[in-house]
Image (cartoon, rainbow, N blue to C red; front, side, top):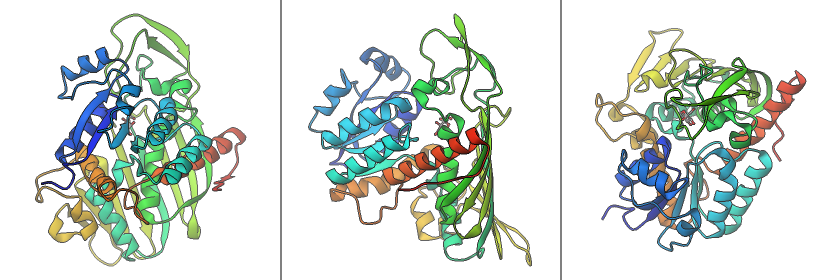
Length: 385
Ligand code: SOE
């Protein structure tokens, strides 16, 4: 019997990421008892194009299902707090998409509640689980590049470039005040803290809205779907299309990040370079099977994902042999393989090897420093309580 075949999960949200959660769980042998859509009809509509289990009649009906051990939340950010809170109070372990919630007060509440209930809690920072990102972390941790001095890179997309591009993330009431930075900037900052082993201590942020008015379709639109086909209404925008942020990390390291959802040709381009006293590592989601190793006194190297050449941490996240490319959806499987070890054990380990609500809360606290810095035009300290 596969290690997780006795475990059961439900997935809330039937957008494209919700389907990725369902498929990753099935690959691990977890029984997905059902999904919760914005309505059972919309969930059934989605099931026509994706192989999904039967929809529950409601979120509450799902919580009442005693078979469900774990609830995965992939709904708009506004719903993360109430849904994660209700799931924890119903005694369910929770995997919640990032950002964990829309403020540090909300993420602190979820972290405290999960701790009180002794339940497994995970924030879906899946990009950590590209094997090359895990390998980068191990090499930095083992001192392969020496003291970290500089981290550069960012996360560029183009799916919100036009004024006809719309998504719930563009409505602060649904997505929160930080939009591009909250949505993909949180991935980048979490990833570089994970790879470098260093925490952000202060930020200097410049945010910009470069599409001041958008033509909002009348009716629901799925993430990454193409422009509207029907009636639209014009709406003024306030949230960040792009950001340039300087960061100071522990030990004096500096970081420079670019975040954008209006960069033509960059569909989902997350990149980092970590420059140390004796070497460097760099990775790009557009060439995700490669890890670049920079040297001063030798030829640079390009390590293609190969479990026989990588650390145990990275090899564990690899399923296919070298040369048989894995990708975005595989990172969800690798993440849940770690999370469900904890679920199978009945609760979180002392030191989880997956991102928890504590990591989601850390991103919310950093996000608040980014908002203060952008509003007041100054460096802002990250205030971790
Ligand atoms: C949209 O920006 C999005 O789907 C994010 O919400 C995901 O977290 C990211 O991995 C891909 O792009």
